[in-house]
Image (cartoon, rainbow, N blue to C red; front, side, top):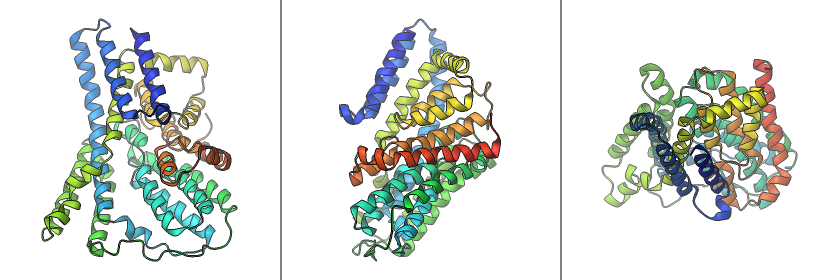
Length: 425
């Protein structure tokens, strides 16, 4: 029965990887795969009380991640509904191509450390379409955005879903993530900025002065209030966890509640139609629910493999055949350019319990960096890349020829900085 469960997982994994080819939403595949894996495990002769105990324990951990993501996504959607990101993007005024590239890269890097890399990429790509008329130049800016968004998400506990998983799971503490991964992530940003700068010369002909909607009824003060409060609530979550020792989703839900209450108060005098468009209910409608269901399915499938002993067995095989854990993590990061990094990190968590590799160990630090940045090597290797591909119609071949080698150097630059700071294994 274990072999059949592995077979189902592999088939599901392949369908998820080939989502664009088979034209089946990966969330549907993940849900079916997760439930089937647990179904097969339940038919393997395991005792009922052990089955329910293991499933309940895993479901509790999974729910914590999902509630965290739901809260974070809703806060981001609320900020976007209030056009809060325009407060930031309207400050960009430079016409110089190289200077603009650095501004965009740094802005993306730090935005992604607070928001998720997908949302950040969408915001920046929309901005670039309004700033840059030349489509050839714009491709290089968007490619930089992909790398910067993935690098920025790797060094904070709320910047990338895989880093969030490691933080919530107890593999990494918030302070340690920032201290150990900030400089490697900076290196992963600086390398592409320098290399792509050489491809850009001169100035852009025209910058669009007004990036906002002239007909919107949202006052500037409301935009700024929702932006500052929303970002503050996101940044408050790690602090809340350190003070209260409660799970991170509790802090995220508190932040969402405060922002929700604030928006209800400031919109009391508006018409019902306008108020509804700026409400949490509207934000929930816009939220990427298929991604939540995808995470649920993947985490269920991986937890089934962990419970039946497949992942611990795979970890022992890797230890024997490869030996060097740094190499294992680096390969894992490179694989994330081909397959989704969420199941890769979930599998690693299942393979290596905290009793074997304690929290804040070198392995977990490198896994957070490698899984977060490795996807930049291919346009389909990260949510940021896929989003940019859809918004700008970047071809797989163009990115592979022009950018992949830069992303590869960026990836190893961060690894090199990590080794210089922490020594070689």
